[in-house]
Image 1 (cartoon, helix red, strand yellow):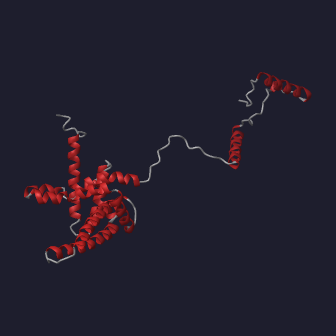
Image 2 (image 1 turned 120 degrees about the horizontal axis):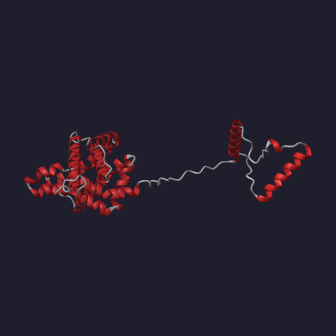
Image 3 (image 1 turned 45 degrees about the horizontal axis):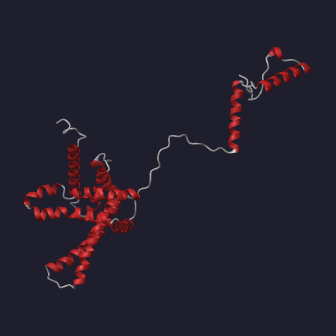
Length: 280
């Protein structure tokens, strides 16, 4: 029983994710009320949901409004483009179903196909804008490419996006409160799980951290400067130059005697190999 209520148990993790998705859904709905802010609110929603899917989430509310503010200009411009296109398509549907306008079958099929394609591009565009720095034009182009290149993921995202509408249509009034709690962020969370691996492939690879010390390449001029510094330090400490032998005062002679003594000592060292080359 204690494991059931443990914070790391699958049940508690599921409930925690559901609570986060509910809160993100509420933020998105509130921030979308002015209509023209829908683009920024959806971009912020996908920014936070991707972190939630990757277990990178921190402060959800703070992250949401930071993404909302940072992407507001581009997201609003892109949303207005989609809004204009959807308005044209909506007029076509209105003319067909309510005004009883007679369109050729080819035009009707083209309108249906355009609706699906634009909707799929929209499903990719706002997540791309939330995760990658690009222009609106570049984001829309990449959204079109991903719609085609990642077609299985696109179809999965398309299916998830229409689930709330199907539930409302077939579920009746009893399911409305549940659907409204996760109407926007619920399907978007599933979409984030689908497009996250695709985004991973487009992200720059992180270089593994190396614990080895970096090697430095010195030029001849650098070596000369280092040797001069070492020499200055030795002079300050009163140490002799490397390779210089210092004889005891009692053995130091003058003239021929000193030369003989030095030669004899040097010969002894060469013979035995015990010379260190540096006085201590």
